[in-house]
Length: 284
Picture 1 (spheres, rainbow, N blue to C red):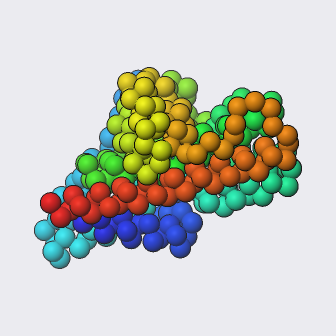
Picture 2: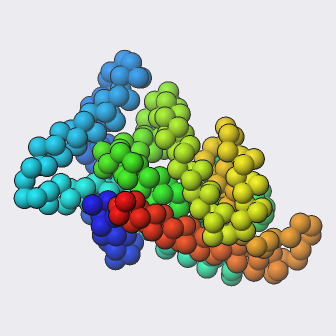
Picture 3: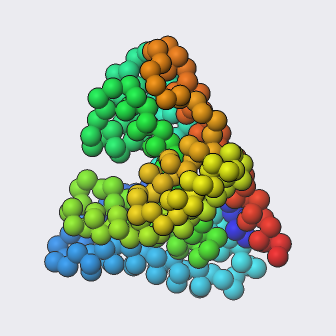
């Protein structure tokens, strides 16, 4: 079931560019507002995440005997689509690259802020910082949009994939109390720990194996955020696009663009590896 659900979700994302109308978060925003008066941060977080997840478990259990599991399958596809990353990542990256390649750094910066939390928080002092922040965001968004969700969907079912997405929303919700955001981010870190390292291993399989595996072993027990770990491992899987030392502006723009496209292709090939792995697991 998981394999076909992933294929359908992938096809829907190719058509819509995202999860489409299924990714409607207004219900969760209203629910968050309802729990705002609860004094305990731990209790608020448990209610925000555990209650919807338990409700999904209950509905799936009730639907399981019906119509040979078809309602469960359809609901699982819908939950997977809802749990995938928000927005059209491909368009955002294309807009960024168009501005970057024209030499419009201000435009590139504004588009980069659309998917780089680091740029929103700290900004960028120069073109190199802008590029590295966006590159890190490309690695992490590719991970949180697909890989982490698929991992928990396959390992523990659609309710676990939903739990991951709800925690991600809470950890990045500016309207939430900082204490709640911090607790959600800590929980999210542990949920991302294993799938991030599994994705790093996939990078090694399809990229520069020796150097990537050396980085993978070095950062396996690292306490760095997932975005940092994926960037450090993923870059070792790629050919060297940005040489050390001073390079002129036009060459830097070209090499940086090539590097981001290579990261995008690495993520796409890694997704294929994961889908093939899921298909094999279904046959065992």
